[in-house]
Length: 387
Image 1 (cartoon, helix red, strand yellow):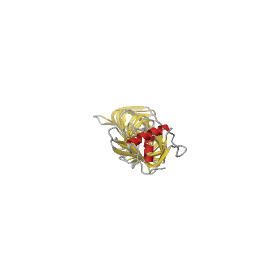
Image 2 (tube, one colour):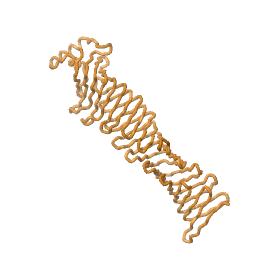
Image 3 (tube, helix red, strand yellow):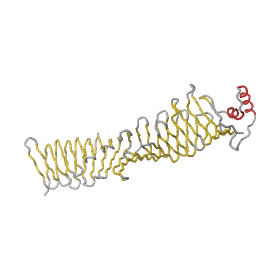
Image 4 (cartoon, helix red, strand yellow):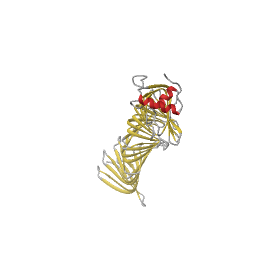
């Protein structure tokens, strides 16, 4: 016998009991009849509807509320079977709802599931879909563990997550309702639509309200244009602001550019992707791989829209092929033509022919050893031309 449009209910302190299932099955509503039924149940074995279940009902709703009556969660199912020895209810095509502060926050669907008698744990399998209503985020997978009391949802196997801006995949995703955070673990790949970029790491935390993504594991970020990588960034830690598209990278940071071919290293770097700017407030090294020029300084900023790099504080520039070296307090490097402007305590030396010169300001090129030193009040200009 099955009963349609039935309703299961229990508070925080009550469990989904066999009594409720039997009451629904037989249509008994009086309290004294319920007590009597419960006594009979404890004394007599219940025949199984199937080899795995004790009772089966159709069109069932399970739900739990807090002590104050505030709704916590609800699960609707096409069919529910109570398994007494395992103290759980098996559900078919469940549709779940998770509430936060009494308001509907998440909708969950699957093909099969199990609701445990204490009401604090729900397992769902096959074609899992979790939908965050407020943030319009959808997570899909093949297995879900729903810890209802803290409001934590763990999705495993073939995980994908997406909204209008982001598409992500991972081995595991954890949705922490109260903290409004999604955590991705294992071979995480996130694709962003504007600007187009790709993130790869093993652990990524999505702080939804703060509109941030945080990685405490090594990360690789690729910037793409016309499906081609035009820039890459690496770091041991990172934080991405989704609102302004600014990435902060920490520890063993490297940024690679394809045109011109640059390798930029630092322990702290801020990458403004929309404006194509990078800023290192600490020691920085820039290698121009094509011309084999290395620049080092206490800090530096790169603007790739106008192809300039500004370095300051104990600046050292070296042309690796000819070992020409330039020291200054500040240096502006023009990437397109490989020229520079240096200011403050400028010192230049070259190996062949041997030559040293000092001055307050200099312009030139390190690669071909063409440097003009401009001097103070006398306006003396010394031009150094290789033999």
